[in-house]
Image (tube, rainbow, N blue to C red):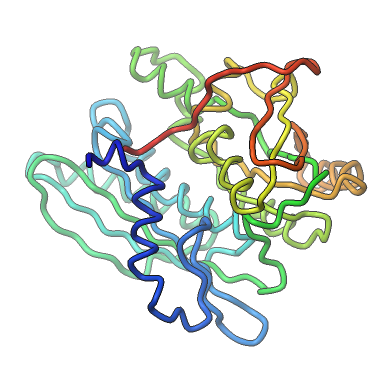
Length: 315
């Protein structure tokens, strides 16, 4: 069978099965944005790894190396934020072809260091090697969190309100504009330099009304599905409430927005919105609710619609 037939999550499920009989020693592994490793009686470490491959995740000719360095770390810090953890370290491994200049890697590291300094995240190690013709970047990030504050994908409850912490679709629009050489597009910088919602994730972890949470990396159409499968629930999503400055389809399928997608108790939703706005100066956006079942029901101004929307897939 080809990988396209197995699919990304079919492959992940198969890998998980191969290791199911090996004891985890109290750790939680495949299935969330980060692995969770008990650290002491009250705290846990979270660990995440992401790959960026030239011509798959970025184009060297169109992506400034400084922005790519920034983004390489940002996508990992976003996963740490989704587990409500504070980042404490990163590890960078990179494979470089002979046609990559020393100036390119110097500028790449400037961007990586810029975001590291912003959140006080030291680079503690990694690896370097050569490659035949493409750049490959692997970043591992670690964070620390109070174990009682971890709220996993599988914690959504029927009648919860579904929120996102930022606008959707800007990164996907930026990628489209990059391909079209629209160099004056304001969306391109949002694609190249996504914001990891670290402080927001930590704050949300302290709110007892917040249940399930993850970051939006593959689009709401895909990422909300992860929450629903893990929680054994369905959802109603109102497309007219999706916060976006581009098309709704791009907003729910494009991915790489890296804002936080979470569910919260409906009774406390209004107070949560007010306190969040007071704390961060930006709104929370309610986009729907959790329901019984196992499907996403899309609605437009109350009317059920039947789009064939899917998020980003890797195979």
